[in-house]
Amino acid sequence: MRELKGEKLEAELERLERMREYERQYDSCAFICGIDEAGRGPLAGPVAAGAVILPKDCEILYLNDSKKLSEKKREQLFEEIKEKAVAYGIGIVSPERIDEINILQATYEAMRQAVGSLAVTPQVLLNDAVTIPEISIPQVPIIKGDAKSVSIAAASILAKVTRDHMMIEYDRRYPEYGFARHKGYGTAAHIQALKEYGPCPIHRRSFIGNFV
Image (cartoon, rainbow, N blue to C red; front, top):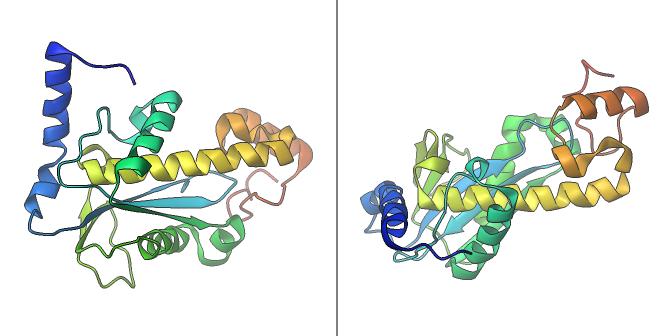
């Protein structure tokens, strides 16, 4: 990643310091875990969740809400987060399960998976906007948390990149839908393909009633 210098570096470090506000509030906790999801809105593919515990003194330049980053930047940060994290976990819930229990419950399930796969147990969870049922660890829901907390931002990148990689794989299996381009979201091209070819095995039947 390109080195920042002088005023630009100073501004970036100040931005990251502001994004540690919630982490500072729970400084007495050894392990603070950020949690976020990717893929609640698409018509196809799984929902993914990331859980990330960063070291207290961790510095990852450009760390931000995954939606504010380019694909190239996300890929770079994805590797750096995995390398520097104390622990990280990913949860994946299938389109079939989404249809079975609804997208909100499937998102919670993916988040529980992600937390459950961590190598260490966190003392507090910083969540992007939600409170996850059936988890005994104290939770702090933060609206737009992926732009306000370094831990949640890291989790958002892990979830987003993991899911994007899966959709690129699905594109090879079902090339007529263009999953590599739109990642399963309801773009005009995707809806057109859905009408033309009908649904494939990874489409969420509960999401596509208006189109097929």
